[in-house]
Image 1 (cartoon, one colour):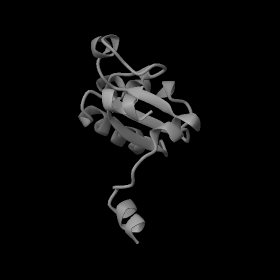
Image 2 (image 1 turned 180 degrees about the vertical axis):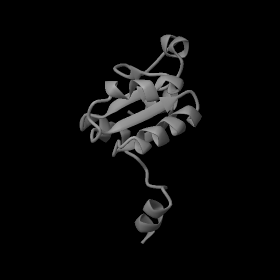
Image 3 (image 1 turned 135 degrees about the horizontal axis):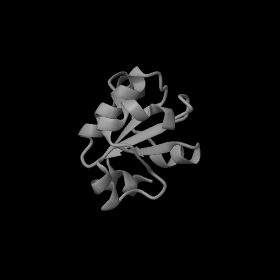
Length: 103
């Protein structure tokens, strides 16, 4: 029952390492300068303010995507944008440094 309640309210813990094993993309939506200052190896950088015009870079709408930024705010906006554009499995990974420790 607790799992059902957690899933209902979005409290389900995401296994980011498992998502990566299944081929997930890490999408870092920070600015180019922030990304250049440090990022998760293999991540793709598309700043959130440029995401709408670069959706074609994310070809498979059914492939898992993990968004990240500095704190989780921009990655949350990116998640919403992706879901609104038909992407089916999008996870907000929050801050990139924290996410890097979870994978």
